[in-house]
Length: 519
Image 1 (cartoon, rainbow, N blue to C red):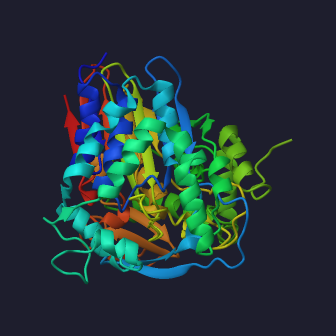
Image 2 (cartoon, one colour):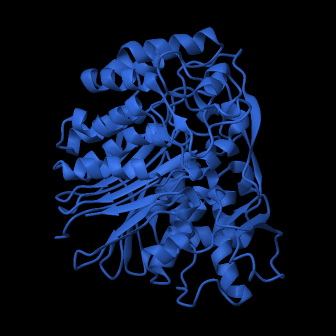
C-alpha cells in the first residue's frame, strides 16, 4: 500500500484542484474530475465541456476499464455545412486546422467524466467543482505556457467575435491574452453552478443540448439537439499486451491510437539497454521504424506505402498477439491478412489506496464557436485530419471518431505501476510508444522516459527534438525536421509511477508547462 498520492497535470491550477479533492477525502477518480473542471478554465485551449476524451481507470479492487467519452459524429449530415482552414504556428513547423460550425461533433466530456465520478468517486460533485467555481469567480493569471499556446492558435481564437472577446489581450487587442494578464470567464460560473445542481442530463437532454443544437443549426452546422439526447458513454475492455515482462493496458477500438501503439511495441523484439540518444544507425532505425509503421497503418492510403517486409512483420506480430489482430480487423476490415489455417491535455493520478487514473481530454484545436451564455468553446473534431483517415468529410453519421488519444496504464517487470498519456494530435502515438519503450526496453525511470528527446515520423520525414536531432546519422533514408528545443508540438505526457515499496515518482512534461504534486 502506498502512502499519500501523486498527480501529474498540465497546469498548476489543474493539479491543485486534483489535490484539493484528495485532501478532502476523495480518491483518484474524484481528483481527475476536479482537475478536469479546473482545466476547463486553466487550459481552455486544450480541453472544454465542448470536447471529448478517454479515461483508463484501474480501481484498487478491480480490473482496469476504459471510459470512452470521445466525440460522436452527428446523426445527420448537413450538405450546406462548411469548414474554414486556419494555420497554427508551432515555430519549428506549421499545422493546418479546420474550424467553424461545420467542424463540431457531439461532445462527450461532461457525460464521461460525470459517469466515471458517479461510478467510482466518493466526494459530492460540488466539492470536486469547488476549485473551478472559485477560479470562475476570481479569474486567473495567464502563465507563460498558456500564453504560448494561445499565441500558437491566435489566428483560430480570434477568428470569431465571441472567441476574440473571450481570449483577446486587453493591452493588445490584436493579440490573444499574454503572460501575466487575467483570464476572466464569468459565464462559466453560471454554467458550472447549473451542472453541479442538475448533472449531465441537464447538459444532454436539457438546456445546453438545446442551446448548442439550435445554435449550430442556425449557422449551418451538422450538430442538432437530437445528437445530445442520443449520446452515450461507452465502457470498454482495455487492449492488453505483454512485452519484456511488462503488461500494458491500451485504448481499444474504435480508438486507433492504442492499437497502433501495440503494433509499434510488438513489432520490434530487441530490447535497447544502451544509452539514449543512440550512437549507431541500426539502433536509430530500430527506434524510428515503428513510428513509420504506425503512421502508414493509420489510413488505407498509407497502407499502400507498406513494403512486403512491413506486412510480413505485421503478420508475424499479430500471429503472436491475436487480441491486437482482432483490434486491427475492427479498424481496417480485411486490410491485414494475418490469420493462419489485423489540442489535448492529460492528467495522471495514483492515490494511497491504489486507485489509478490516466485521463486524456481534448477540444481539438477548437472550433472558435462559443454559443452565447455557455462560457466554453465547442470542439472542431470534424475538422481534425488525423481523426478521419479517409480524408476530411469522409465521416459516417452517428459513429465514434477514430481518436489517436491513448491514456495508458502499465505494470512493468520490476513491479512499477505507471499511468501515462499525452496530448499532441497525431504525435500522441509516437510519444506514448517512445515512453513505453524507454520504460520497458531500456528500464528507464519515468522522468528520463518523459524528458528524453522525441521523434515523430510523418509524410516521409522524421521530426526530431534537439538532443536526438544533433546525433541522428546523416545516412537515414528520410529528411530530418529539426525542433531546436523541447517543443509543445510533441505533446505533454504527464506521468506518474508507484514502485513495489509504495514510493511515488512523477514527471510533468516540460513541453507543456505541467506540474507534479504529491502528499
